[in-house]
Amino acid sequence: MICSLAIALVLWTVLPLAGGVFLWVPASIPVASVVLRCHYAADSLLGIVLATVSFKVLG
Image (cartoon, rainbow, N blue to C red; front, side, top):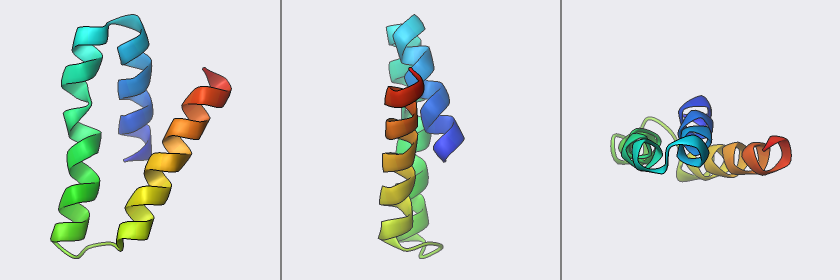
C-alpha cells in the first residue's frame, strides 16, 4: 500500500488526471484490509502517513 500511494502521489505531480485515477488503488487497500479484518485500522493509517511523509520529504 505504501508503494502504490507513493507512486500515485508522484504520478499526480506529473500528470494530475492520471494520478487522480490511480489514487483509487491505494485508497481501496486500507479500506478493504480493515473491512475484511486482515489488518488493524492503525496499520492502514500508519501506512498512509508513512507514504505521505516520504513523498513530502523526498518530493
